[in-house]
Image 1 (cartoon, rainbow, N blue to C red):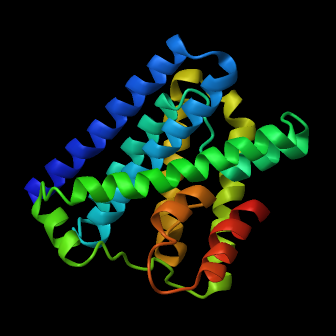
Image 2: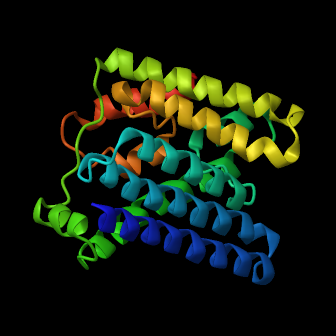
Length: 238
């Protein structure tokens, strides 16, 4: 189990390092018009790919909850610190559209980029898992990369949890400027970790439509419309 955890952490670190290298290259080589889309795509890929591995550790690796929450906090801090302004969340883009800070065309392109990156993340992690770098990956491959349904309550309860989590994150985002700049990523990561702890057993606590699309929609247990209700409508209402 310890070896599986080390390999998974190494895989996650590799994803972050490669993604950061691409972001920095984009910053140097791409014009601002294209840079925003590339950074959004790479950051969304990083978020989804890392979450796939963390989800695998929790479901098949059966890591202890305190280890899982610690990894959630660390990775949340890393993501926030490396995203370079990317939202990686369609609900945030919709909010910007409603506030008039982005155009309908720009919002549509960014959301399409996010979902495309989420799909790429699915195939990328499956390709890495197929290498059998750890016993955990080998077992997952033998099971046909089958994932488990995290919804532990009714659909209404799960949607309510996703909505409440999204509301809390939005409220924090609106007031995070009051926190010292050096502590902002840690404050956000602490809230994310708490929400995962509080609501994870009911809905999985994704509160991000594109992240749920990448990591949860391929799982058995519920239909696509039901997943859309929980993981798309819930966060938007929040």
